[in-house]
Picture 1 (cartoon, rainbow, N blue to C red):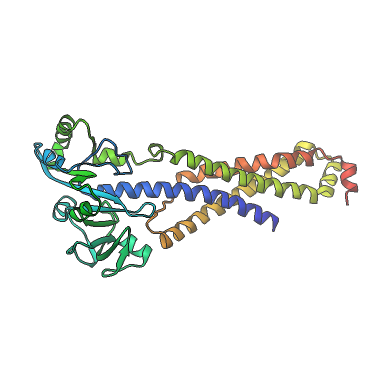
Picture 2: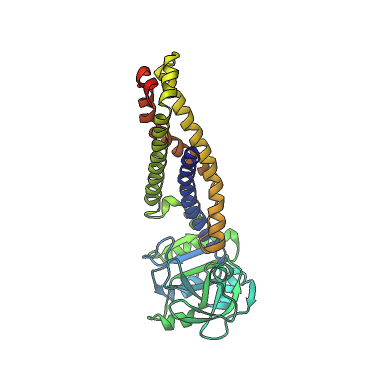
Amino acid sequence: MRTFLSAFLIGVQVALILTLVGLSHGMLQDAAKRSQGSGGDIVVRPQDSSLLSSAGRMREGVVDVVRSIPHVSLATSTLVQPAGGPFEFITGIHVDEFNAVSGGFQYIEGGPLKQQDDILIDDLEAKSKGLHAGDMIDVGRKWRIAGVVASGKLSRMFVDIKTLQYLYPPSGYVSSVYVKADNSANIDAVYDALEQKLDTYKIYKMQDMTSLYSVDNIPMLKPFTTVVIAVGAIVGFLAVFLSMYTAVLERTREIGILKALGASPGYILGAILRETMLLAIAGTLLGIAMSFGTKWLMDTFAPTLPTAIVQDWWAIAGLIALGGALIGAIYPGLKAARQDPIEALAYD
């Protein structure tokens, strides 16, 4: 039972690391996928915006400037407004323009926006809150769900941009402009022209922007991951330390017999460390299996927080578990190796 609990705690450590890494990768991959789902080739944002946030504002007149650029086929603006909860945002759109740029919504339930208080939500948002077309949803204010659409089109909640501008003044401001070139061969030319004409704005090619969705480019995410990994390593260290220290005490007579038969201190230490390595390997395998379980739980009960299985981290998490376990086994191993055989044989 002690051995199982030790392996289980190491598994919890590994599962904690893999779940956190999977959550960060899953959310970034989902954000990149939804950005690509906008259909735009280029994105124009205000100077004070960030990669994952469209909190900045710019005059809506910039859309006319964008449309005046040669080879711009379509351009549409959006307005992003926080919806109260963490990671919850409402996106205001010009429905016809957005449909032209993105290719339009795929309706699972209901239909398009018709009234001022109508809202569209994606299937993951509907699943997470148990909502259907015709229901009311309270996100800052109450909206009537006109339709449930397939996820992957920029946001999880959409309303008419004019309604959002009226509710959250000042009006006449937008968060982003999505630009579609008349031909993929002209994307670079459009990008260069926008850079010259809108030199005070942030301008991204969609392909370049989505490549920036990584842990290294998100402030505080990497330090947070490092802290959680350190906590996991400490948990593994303590689990193995307590387990092996107890094991050494319980096996004092056995250790005395081995030493009386000629076993060297190195042999005793090696036996302890080999057992620790087996615990770490078993715990790592258990933790990998547990990470699939946590992914299923997240997908079932929190579908708006997508989690990925990052296989590249299996070996890294295993090495972290092994390192913490070996460090935790050193003192109990040295204590066993240094025991006097006569005292060990007399131990009751």
